[in-house]
Length: 432
Image 1 (cartoon, one colour):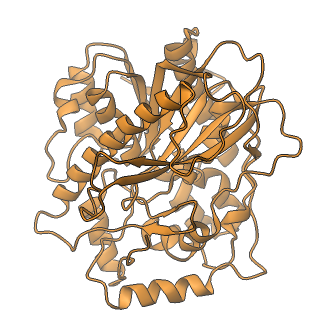
Image 2 (cartoon, one colour):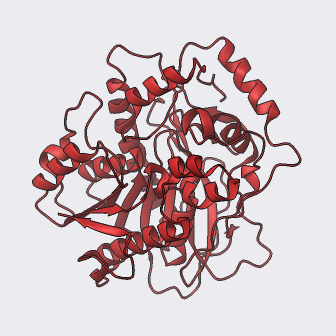
């Protein structure tokens, strides 16, 4: 299931592709051009990655009262041809389910990335797609410490069934780039499902070891608008399919194509009447569109994702708003989210808020905020990646507001933190 990688036609082409395909201001993705030397370039890069001296990184511990378990699921939609490869008569996805547990003894640590996916992320994704200026070969992403136990049983005696939250990654990001946020919510008593959208995600490794990499068309005459519209439509359909499969899982039917054993207690533990969705960049855009299309999703968060298409027109959800609560969390400084967000708020009759994380950058809502400081990059490079805000402060602040939001709308919590500025979190500003 491996497909050619985008051919690097130089920094100017990558920056043009960024403007073409990005849904948010700083979302970086190399447009795919006709193959040829592309596969050889990628193969050479992968061969150079992850030498024995490569360092491993670590995510911060989850902050909730529970430890965290995880299981990866290979989901197959036999009712659809793959939208990016119509010759494939089924759509295959990989998702990870994070959940609270109390028994981790003897359980292996959940890998941050599987080996082939980690090599591709190191050699291609981190720099060509995300422009993070990370020297290839110095980091073994597969050994990043997650503080998550693979296949651990669901916490016994948990107070009720687990609200479900879907996580959609940014454009050019794998689902694992949101592990810290997913694990933290799970430690507070949620089931969090992170989704890779195959062939749009930069790399997806399947249980049989095959690797599906991003597969995009040549630069189109519409400057990428058609690609963005299609990618978002595919994400919305994928999210609905994942919810369908979670319903099967919760009823005791295994949705996994490979009949992988499920963690003890996971079936029957999901509260699918309390579903939320969030994500950074294009993942936040997808959350808004998925809520608009699927009323099973009752609360969402958009982290710095645009609500206008590449041609400048408003997305439908910005034109008519939502009838359910929605939170906008943006980076600091000049941003192109303004027109779409303003229209969305003006047309949304129900609860909505717009927050700004002061000193942040576009990647501050991803694992970059935790991992980039461990790479010992030059200060100006680090600031470009994750802003000037103290990384620990950014993580603590993001987690506080994300958990307060879902606690309020999925559990009936007080929501006091969402009412206005808090002296405990002075770096989160409320916009009128």
